[in-house]
Length: 470
Image (cartoon, rainbow, N blue to C red; front, side):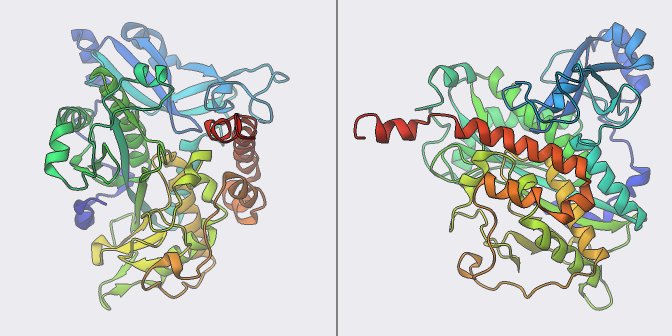
């Protein structure tokens, strides 16, 4: 997590969140459209797979029609597989229901210029059915329900995501033509913290940093990681929905910028046999007036509330792993001794545990090391908040800390396959309680679709082992 999380006491009440002066008001957007600086307004929402989807609108049409009256898109957008095929099994959308529309509900606090797309501004959206009913399975709506629940207790949630990626010198089109094999990584050796290694990729990293800053994010730093061509760009923590919004924009923008430079980026959890891409998530609760929740100043120690929260995250981790590891490939990352956690355990500044506690006082927070770079930030943060609040409300006791390697501690382990994670989530009483049965059905079907696609595929591994020798 970024060092600035240590300055967490300066965070302002999220219910009166100060406007980032690099974000636009509606009036500023109108003015820039009138001046010709903006000619395209993009309405985007984050789908189940964590991707920004939506429409590119002519700016004058947006002002004349959409700003007041809104727009819509097909409700199958939350009922497709990764390749955008419509699939069966979803309550929200089907042939029988006629594949109707859902409304894009613009969040006018999220207007930002996209400097890497000339003349473009983005507005992020919530979703509702045409009768005005909110779409309960929308990832952003799921996270907002958990933040509302925290607010009922008098708390707000702050979070930061650390998202790793691998850079290749091949374009996306070249990677496709090569069947994603034999690509050239931007670095040919481990460049963890290497200034020389980062310098080799700096033209790309610099563009991403500067253009994300111009798009309204607080950019901190870039550093090399272990895999060949692997890097990370860090952003300052924020209120959890804002963090998830920024994460989604950044992930899309990084790919766009790489494409513009003739390179490609992957956020796959495990793109090859070396180190995978992680997305460590740091989270803390604060009072609505910014008072400490996780730390007692008088005793200089964690509060019982903090311990209950950690206990809840751990107690629900196996059952909620589907939201932390949402793809078949996600589970290839869970390898002992790889800095990807396999044990459901917590420790003080212990990177072998799935939950690592860092900081003290105003910087006290937990780091969830389970998610990979392919995670949907809204779903992962929903799971963390829901599990932590469950722990507080049920006063779950925190188990003893893990000292030494959690890999050999004998602690319970996270699911090792999507099938196992799917079954744990489908049968979770807690998941149905905190998310609702409609959400559980929806994301169990998501897992079933991915499993069916994978289990029917003929892999290179099978061909290499069996074509001649069997």
